Image (cartoon, rainbow, N blue to C red; front, side, top):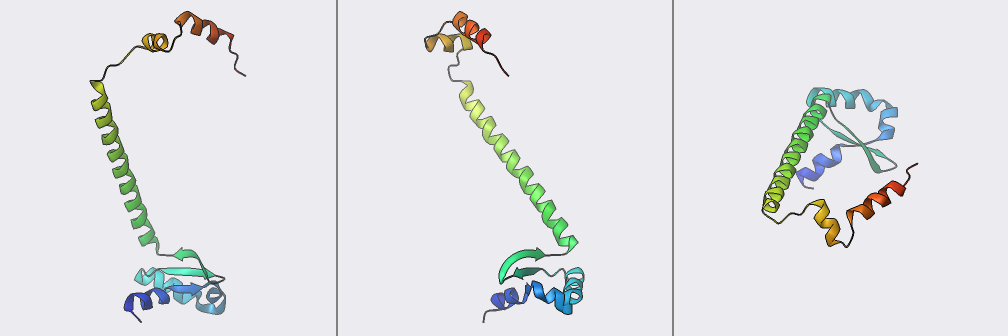
Length: 116
């Protein structure tokens, strides 16, 4: 059996192990050694048990990645805006006329609409 698979299987803990007096040992191992466990219920992975230190480190990484993704998206949008800056832009009135409407018609229509 490969070492990675052996390590993985040692991290699997049935929920019934907690009721059989093994909870103290598992929690001590998590707190002292930063080990993680996958909790099984009905032989299905249900939860992960990890130390507060590890949880905080993962949350910090998630926050940094989210910030990075936001910056990447902002850069993408800025490049898109710059590429469109030189395109021909039309005023709203020009757009309305191109669509075959007259501004006065839209104004009358907007006055007849009621919002509830």
